[in-house]
Length: 218
Image 1 (cartoon, rainbow, N blue to C red):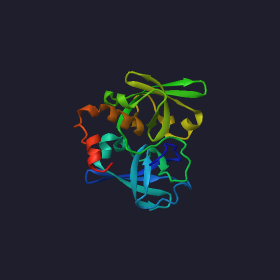
Image 2: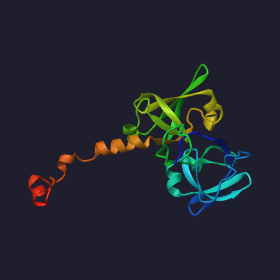
Image 3: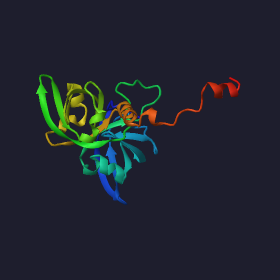
Image 4: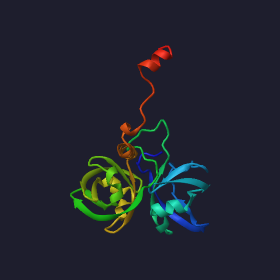
């Protein structure tokens, strides 16, 4: 589990095909945050939870499987591509963002980037199937970054980007038409699933009544 608070921006330094998937090597430079990474540990690459399979000085590798390639933008990564990095949260960490699983729901397209004084407003077009999972002022993850939905308009939503986030993540490299990974708030997905479930009235009636209770000594 992650919080969507990006700790560093890494650079892809190797892309190798592996039985329908990819082996990605990520350089993180001199970041002390990632220097203690170990094999089998989870790490978020631009919002996609991956398992570390090899480590070295200043780098680590992950195996990205077909399911991940189908749902995310990781398949488009090339040598030199930048990725947002976050290590899995520990029980003692501050939860500065929101609960992020690293299970990307879909890839979406940047519709527009507006400059608003010192901040920027990023508009993203998303698939209609995910409409039930997004609300104004709710949480959403874009390329692993925990953000708040500032505006919602049909199949478009906007988030406000402060200068620090813009400068210290891959958001500064986005432009109209860029593809990004989206993970919708897990709490919203569970609520939507519950509301879509059959009504409790459709369930068989309970056998527990006053007579049943008396017969069983209650």
